[in-house]
Every structure is written in structure tokens, then in C-alpha cells.
Image (cartoon, rainbow, N blue to C red; front, side):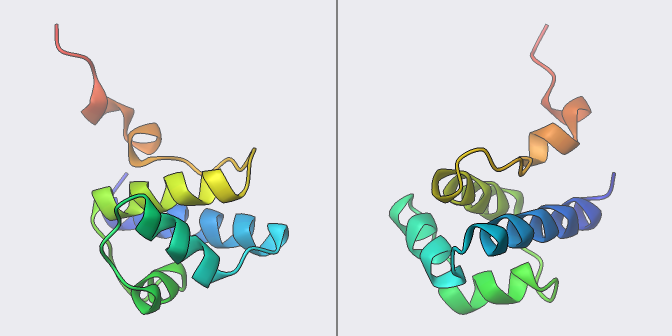
Length: 90
């Protein structure tokens, strides 16, 4: 799966999860920032609407933040969607 496709899937699933839980984008950004994230709230909003590409690290940090805000959310990390790139060393 292409990285751009993964980014869009993660954004869609994240936006759906936080919207259904009544969590705002500002809350997501705040949690992400507390976890050490470096992008701003506007970039988070733009990413969630598929208009900005984020690195794997930023996306996975947003996933972590969303999972903390929405327990039980099934938002995949990048490694979950590209398991062939995350094989353990022999």
C-alpha cells in the first residue's frame, strides 16, 4: 500500500473516531502536543481533511493521541498497514 494511501486512510479513520466521540480537533492537537508532537493545530485540521501529507512519525503520534482520547478506537498505526516494513530482525 502506498504511503499516501495509508495517510488518507489513517486521517479518515481518525476523523471518524474523534467526531463520533465528540472530540474536537483542538483536543486532538492538544493531546498530540502533550505527547511531543510538533505540528500546529491548523496542520492537524488540514491533514484530517486530506489536504496535507504528514510524515509517518507525525501520523503515528496523532494516532496515539486519538487512541488516548477515544479508548477503543481502531485507528491503525502505519506499521499495522505496512507490516512487511516492520518485520523483526532475524
